[in-house]
Length: 181
Image 1 (cartoon, rainbow, N blue to C red):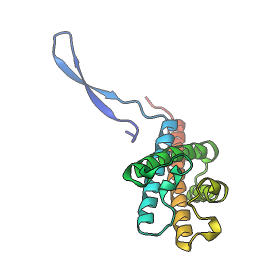
Image 2 (tube, rainbow, N blue to C red):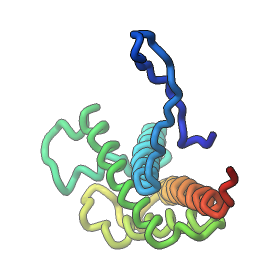
Image 3 (cartoon, one colour):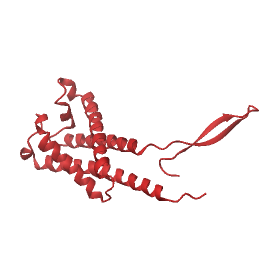
Image 4 (cartoon, helix red, strand yellow):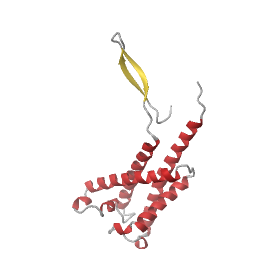
């Protein structure tokens, strides 16, 4: 039985009023739903590690920076702001995972995902930089911030890339297997 297929026991009552347990297989999650969930979890997890890195001053950029273009108020500096920013990163991670799914899912090497994450780093720090006023320009970042941020983005890309490519390969292998009865 694969990871996506689970058996559950369902109680039914027969004609005589006796209860029976029957095995019923749950429907596996669709590949697209798996991609979205993987991206959401990856975005929330790696931005959470980014928050921890900012607490230990490995980076000047806190995950709360994502709230700057959209919100005003002191709440962004509280735990509610942190939770909202982690959820927002989860949503952005789901979008990034969909991008990987569309363009790169058939590529197997792990470094493709890491490179995808570094590409996302470049997009955020080069192109989207003006949206985040508290984020220093790329050339003014400390070396710790640059390395930590690049590694977190690279590891996020590796996480979604490997997960999506692995699941794509598993589905391909399963579909190529001859069905024997």
